Length: 297
Image (tube, rainbow, N blue to C red; front, side, top):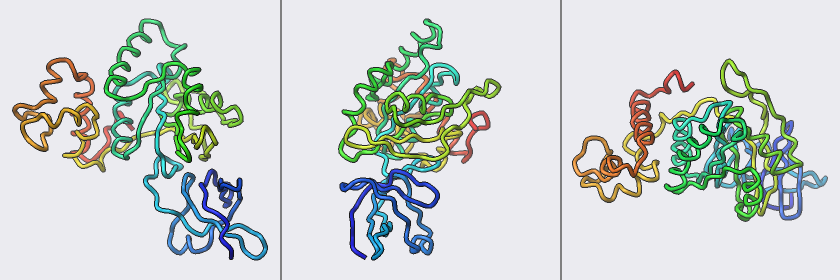
């Protein structure tokens, strides 16, 4: 076999792997060695491919992954565009905080996009915007306009970087992708009003070329499991807590009842949102009990 190229797996279709290389798109099969090692290439994997004597391309090696997120999974995600709906499903700070904590734990940067803002009452929208202003203040880019997002996103995606959409089912991820990338043709689904959640419409994951890199659509997360996070590390995944922790009297302060805690002082001064701190406490309980609360499943 002669080596052809390295590339990025952009889709999996019926046992074939489409790999984007510097020479263009190559459709490959995986070598049998992966069955023996029980490895399976994922969309987003950097891989090596080779040609056999008949000119058929084979995927022969998976380069080390930095992460793997979602079901079906995307590997090597650099940035998440988190789609949170204003309504249908209803806007939830608790859900937003869970997503942000989960992705911080995974070491992935996040930008936030508020979808369906045209479907909510003006006073409720003003309240949501005010709440999201806090997240912008602590370092998360927040997009309230689909047009602005579509204009800025291609320039934000760096060379061979992988961004992925994420958010609960029905939040409007596929609709957004179809707007940003007209040739994506992703299916969209109706909302189940009895459950206030969308039907899953994304059956497989695919990378679409955007800017200098890729954008992936992923299915919604039906539940976010935070229980594998180590309890004493949780506070480090709250951006504003982490920045203030150096001012706490005790190293490793958990920001509970410890004296001279900079986080608690900021909370009392109104510099940290009470909802964020309450969600932190709720996550601590969840992790210590080792199970996702029923109402979040």
